[in-house]
Image (cartoon, rainbow, N blue to C red; front, side, top):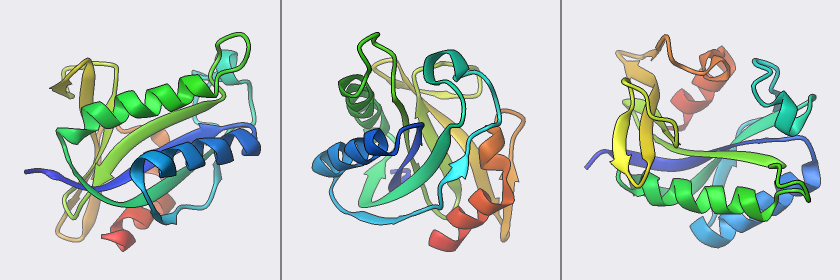
Length: 160
């Protein structure tokens, strides 16, 4: 069974919405082990129309071991949390990407299928964004720019 420690990448603009999202995730998934420092999410303007600018992102590690197959249900639950916190125009106020990491890899769940992603069923795909080999962190052409940052890669490699 592949899998590892559950984490969520949360992107937000409003700290109070972020805190509500974290509480809802804790209600569903239990205790938090640690988190990264917040960082400015300015790698793309993909989210600009929906969220605006000046976005922040943080990674939160939960005290829960999951299998790769669990990612489908967890992605659906995290999407429900996003929708609970939508504004009056049905725009999200928080983007929540669940994933897991272990000594070999960092994998995110996605609703967007691509040839380099593994179909987990229920419209959810596993997207490997980092790999750990021989003490080195490797990224891919399809790794999100923020996951290519050395500080994020060190965050994961120090935790396992």
